[in-house]
Length: 392
Image (tube, rainbow, N blue to C red; front, side):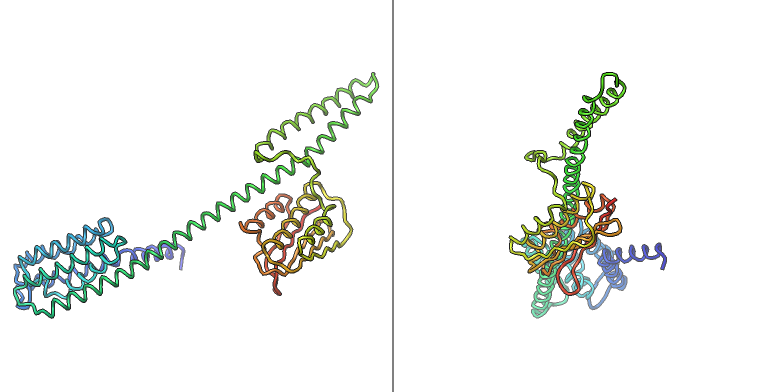
């Protein structure tokens, strides 16, 4: 099946689901018209045929507008039936088609969300059935009134129950859609927050390096001889450019900081502090095993901070959200990369806490440096996270 054919089938099925009641109304019109054209009928319709045709359309056509006028349209149909009973009482009263339509209208009234409207519709249908029965040229037994009362009431109750169920379904669907929108918004905010945090940390790392360069250029400039004017001018340009770059960085990153957040004065955390991080996690009550495989090598400042933050976030999840009994941290240096594997035996999701966006932040950090991140439950239970970062 081609895509165009599939779209056509989907559109037709959607139209069928929406307009199947309208199709039934058209079928009812056809049924009543067939009765009208046979008038006079000894068992019901007395004619003339044109009058019964007018009654048919006056009775059923308002129902096409039930979506826009959920109470007005069926009440109009009921009013037409009451008026028609005085002109040709046997036409609708002795028609099985009109009886089925009346049952449908009773169910429609029962589905109304406002109980006052629902009860008013039920009373209108009962009153209509009584008036039509009285105006029937043939005597109507009392049992017919009782039968009509019971069947209309049963149809109304069915509509009432169905309407409640449909409203619950719609409410659940709306809540699910709202929750999905909120999750998407929270994920977007989490990504923006993590990117801002990465930018702040990079500012601190790069700012420190530029500061060192500027200070060194200034120191070297002061050590030059008096005849080294060209060298002095070149170093002065380096010094001024460095100071301007620092000022611009502070202005740019300043908008990313929270109002209550001051610039970082302490050194950024790095893999040199990984043992302290593991020891601190052990103090919280979670046994953590740390293994370092391969020969540790100096990492670029940004990657160093990112690796530390990933381990920190994973251990925080294991303590607060995964309900883990033990955890393991493996740091492997090999093939120009540093690979971090953090696993635990917890039963929780381990996906980043109450907000569920811890992994979003970690993926953002890893993607900044072109790394890879895998996370998910283990086959034997627990949760494992593996991140690979290029050292170069």
